[in-house]
Image 1: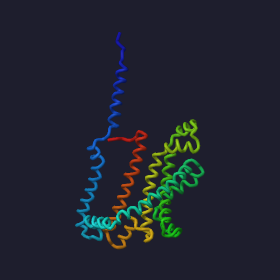
Image 2 (image 1 turned 180 degrees about the vertical axis):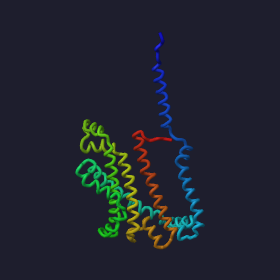
Image 3 (image 1 turned 90 degrees about the vertical axis):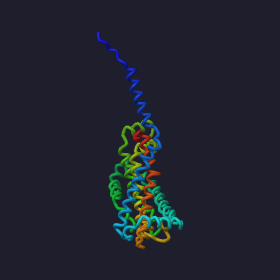
Image 4 (image 1 turned 45 degrees about the horizontal axis):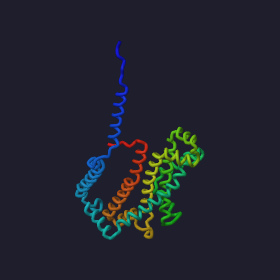
Length: 292
């Protein structure tokens, strides 16, 4: 009679050992070389390519009013730093942008929950939010100036009108993707009303909410730049948008490039310091972060 013996214990142990090895490899800390190659080297290479193209194009264009040299732009940065104005430009805009974004979060979050959970409100306001999200933020600057005048309240109003729809729509999208099983389980365990929103709905909708926040910040920053460019006034201080407009009025392309680079720098810095770590935390908490 043929033997029918098997070795399930040994096979099971081998599988578990293999899974343990895979898990250990996936969660190991990257080496300094891997961090440099994967995180630091790519942006340095991209920056070097941009500078090389800039150096090549400058003598071809041969017109400082259209394309300044990298040295001229660096000189404008140096002068602004020595005069103590550079950080002031950045802080004026960043402080407005972050405060306006915080206000947009306070308004957009409950509005998004209301639209997501109340059918009548969604039918009434949902299309309006989508329409407002597609409306260019610069369109709000003239009416905001006429309503409120040239002051910081006008700036914050433009930021709110640009950012709130994105935050609310992102949260609505996240809530729509919450599995009904989660909600039923939460109700069974007593998580109803505000408790259900705080302990079940918001955590489950977090990926869509974070995406909405990231897009809301982008709209906040664009709205603020549009407001500073169009509604410039000495009492408001010189932000990055005002700096860009000053360069245009003076036909100083080096100053224009200085403002553009600072606006780009702030956008990248906010993403790297706030939203990228937040996205990684959300993905890691759900076991979705893929490490290379």
